[in-house]
Image (cartoon, rainbow, N blue to C red; front, side, top):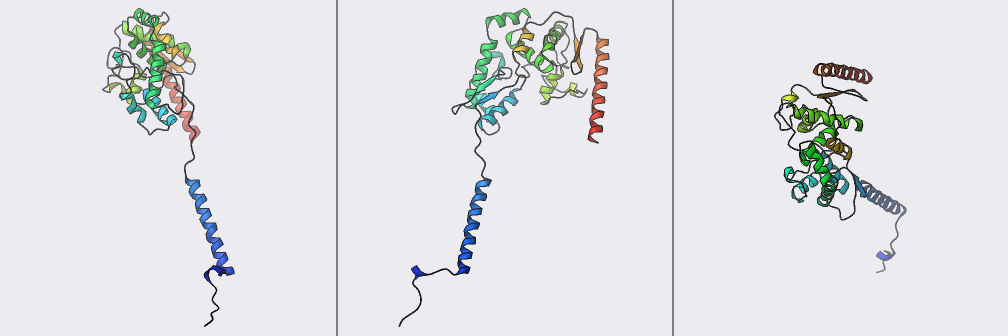
Length: 282
């Protein structure tokens, strides 16, 4: 018996069928495009990393993780096992020896190799006989000088004040006075603020230079060349106190009553600045 059914190979789509197939194809194509749009873009790896003067080790670790595309915390872990060439006084802690500079990066750079590069650079810049002799003139060793330089870096409002800040530190040590540096409290509390409360000065920490005599146990950041030079060769002076009353106006004195007046002016300026900020937000 004859049939009029076409063979499968010669079947034709109806107009409706062609429309359904075309629509399905468009939807599939759109889905593929959407998937690719959702995929993260290839991030070009930077070719260098700049370590900023005064950065703490934690900030350096975070910057290295980001630059090398590593998971957060990778560089901090690497610092413990990288066998960095640190002075014995550091006891394996690279704080103060991650030298501020711009470092090249390539496909072979690892967190451990980059940290080693920084520490080796610090050794070249900070480890000469001339620097050791300079430290001895101030009755401290080189590691203690790096610690002082880290405080100078954190406390000084600018390069012009660094030498005087260093002199205040040495004078207070010589007079048997606690250093009372807000920068060391900030380091202990993991912050960077201008205002320090009485409660802050009572925290239990080896970095609390209000409650403990002498230098903190380690540097509190990674000082640059200018801060290190100030710590090695501070100018002569009898200053025991300083406060930055406002931008560009840091006052040094040996008179406690004058210091109290300067601090009172600082507090008034801070209060006025906060009130202006509140008005602007309102």
